[in-house]
Length: 617
Image (cartoon, rainbow, N blue to C red; front, side):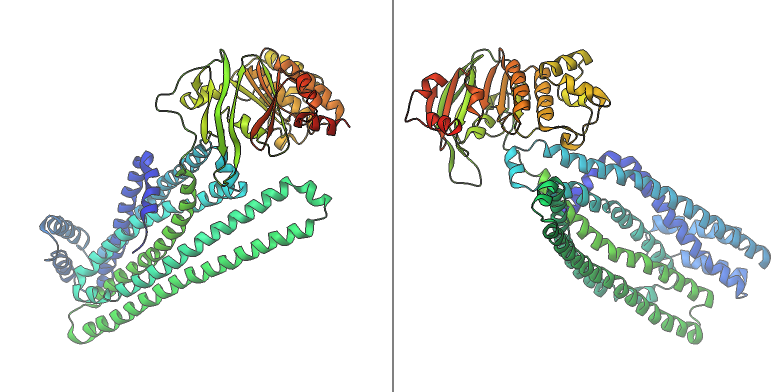
């Protein structure tokens, strides 16, 4: 009836912590037993207070333990334990019996609470670690996905899944705990109740199926609303992330009120779903409680009738039966929430599993080549490319060969396919048709890690991290000396401004490097590429967003970086690519011109000449 497949999949994350889970279950069993014992002791206690004889109480306990409905391997040990208890506790004067019962009750409650504490501790250890593993798996798999995945997913939604949804899944451990403890508790008290009067006990549970049907219906409703809730939270996170990143543009265009209202609309929808869930969830407890009270009232009436008229039950037995029955009600009530929690947790987990179950399009071949150097050339052979969400060819039958050490410039209007072309070299995407070859080897047959180790990439949008200058320069290069870092910074024209920072190379540069200017950020990214010292360099409009002074410094650093390397340069500013060995002019995904600057400028009707004249008119 219910979809528990996701729930059982979540439980697989508990495997590494089976020992702590085992200890928690053992403590749970002992908790349930001592909880039952504390109630079971109420019968002789009440019998003593009601002035029943010790012989009668001993006889009753022994009779109660001898149950025909229990198998011999359970009934016999239970009978032995009960007989020992009856002889040890219910002997001596009434005051002695009262004293012994009070001491045993005190010990039973003490042990019950000790085991309850230990159970909670062991379970918390399991809970925190399994949620950590759950988050780690989702985050790790996220890094294996290609750029096309991130192109189609909102950043805020991904953040929400790994943070908010994982926090919701955390409730799965208490659910597991309840699924162990509550049934055990119910079993213990049902055993006590059956030993006193199996007829009344069986009758009291006739109404249970109706309760379960209501609980199941409520659970389905909650799961549906929970999915809506997680989607709305992802929307709120996405708006928040976009607003923080675009705060300058928002203020520049006076759109504060628009963004505030958009955020308020999302939070209002979120609140409405929360209230709807609360209404549904809160209905479960009163319904279950009413059913429990209904059972209790019927039992009180029927049991009281037996005590007052037929004398089939003694007053102490009847009260013990009531205690047992009403001790069953809280676990049943708790189990009514278990289904709700399973539905909520499963709904959140399904959103995270959407990430984990996404198969990366870009993967290593079965037996990838371990090639680690560029020896001769890079070749594009009849390469075409179409994005998965489009029918238009971004690249159309592109073929060219670049020899080692050459500088290749890519020129063309926006949307001509320049960035897509260079993105194929490190396998951010794979060609729809054709192949990219390095020294004659299809890069799809190369190990991705080795392939990307051959390359350094500097883009217009510089990506830096909220760490020190030193850590940003050495990012991805492992353990390097301070001297190497400084030399790379000097070659990138970055050393002087770094030394002017309050903490020099140890200065934290803020999220995305916001404490630095655009030119400074770009020079740090070039220093990072220099330190990596790759044989292939890719520059994607690395100077297009800089002022003239910064452009000169960055261009000098780029020229140093290009020396003795195979380089691909995308540039709108044609002045920066005059010295390229070859210039490829792209238009609508095709190479329409190929040559040096001097050769292309002579073609008065060519696109390159047109772009050049427009820029230097």
